[in-house]
Image 1: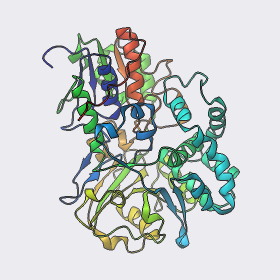
Image 2: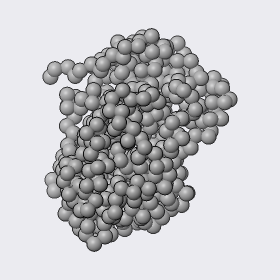
Image 3: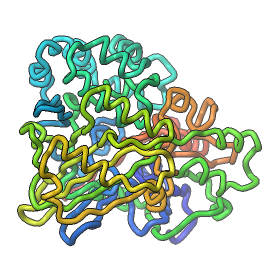
Length: 490
C-alpha cells in the first residue's frame, strides 16, 4: 500500500485471510504479510512428486469449509471455486472386504449399518436437521452464552459431545461398522480417543457428511486461498509475500494488528511488551501429536477390496474401533506404532484435473509424537495394503514430510501439530490462555486470529472472523459487523 494501512494481518492462512476480508468489508485499508511466496498456509497445492500431479500439502477435504458461517457467507461458487461432493463422503474399510460407509444421504448410510441403522438415525438425525444452528453456535465467539436457535438440538449435542468416542460408540451401537465409522471421524482431532470431547468431534464430522458434505475443491485447495486473496484485492486490500515478521515494532503506528500465528511466535514477536503472566501461560500451552505425510503419484486408482471405498473422497484406514483407539493412543503417549490410524484422501476419484490422463494422486498422513522425525512410509503403506492389496504396484512416485518438515513448511505446525495446539476440552475453552476474550492480548491493539484461538483447528475461517469482529469493536468502534462484499459480476 502507498500509505499506512488501518490494519495489518500477519499470515495468509484461512484465518488470516478471513480476518482481512472482514476488516476490509468494513472499509478499512488492510494489508496481509506472509512469509511464504504464496498464500494459503495449510491451503496449498503443489507438484511434489511428478510434473502434472497436483497434491494438497495439508488440507484437502473441507466439511467445515462449506459449513462454517463465514464460508457460507463468502460463497465459494460466486468466487469461481467449484466444490465437488463425493457420493461417499468417507469410508472405513474393515477386514474381510467389509466397510462402514458414510453416504451423503443419511437414510442410505443407516440402511448400510444393519441393526444399528435406527440408532444411527436417532443419534444423527436431529443434528442433521439443525446442522447450521449447531455449527454456528459452536464456531461463533458467543458459544459461552445460551444459543438463541435450536436450543434443544444444541443441548442434546453438547451432552453427547462431552464424553469420549469409545463411550458414545458402545452406548449407541452394537455392531462394529457403526462404531468404526464414528470413531474414524473422531480421530481427526489428533487426541487420545479415550479423552473427553472426542465424541463431539466424531458426531459433528459424521453429521456434516449428511448435512453440508465433505467436498474437495476442483483443481486443489490452493484455489480456495487464491479466491480469498482475489476477493481481498477487489476490496482494496493487499498481500505481501516473502515477508517474515520477527518484531511487532515493525507495525508501530498501525491501529490494529492481527496474528494468524502460533502463540510462541506471538511471544517472540512481542518481546518485552508481554506480561510475565501471559508468557507463563503460553509456555503451558500444549501442542498435540505431529503428522507424518505421504503423497503418491499413482498409475491406477487405489485397489480397495471393497468397491464402495473406491468411490469415497476420504478413507479412514485403521480397522476396528479398538484398533483406531490403539492407533491414536500411541502418539498421544509419545510412542510410534506399527498399526497407525491412517487418514487418506483420493482426490482424483472426483477430480481428474489433478493428474495426467488415467493417472491419480493420493495422500495420507498418520499421527506421530510431536517433533518425531521417523519415516513412517512402510507402516502407512502396510496399513493401506491390508485393505487394498496391490497398492504398492500402482505407485509411480512418492514424497514424504516428517513432523519437523511440516513445521519448516508452515511454522504454525509446531512439532508437526497441524492443529496449532492440542484440541483438548480445557484448551478448547481457554485457547491459548485463560482470558475471557482470548483474541485480545496484553499488547494494545494486537489480536490473535489463528487456530490457537476458539473454535480451534479446521479450515473454517472462524478464528480469524471472530478476531476481526473483536478488533472492529475495540479499535474502530464498529458494533454492527459489516457483511462480506459479494463477488463482482463477471
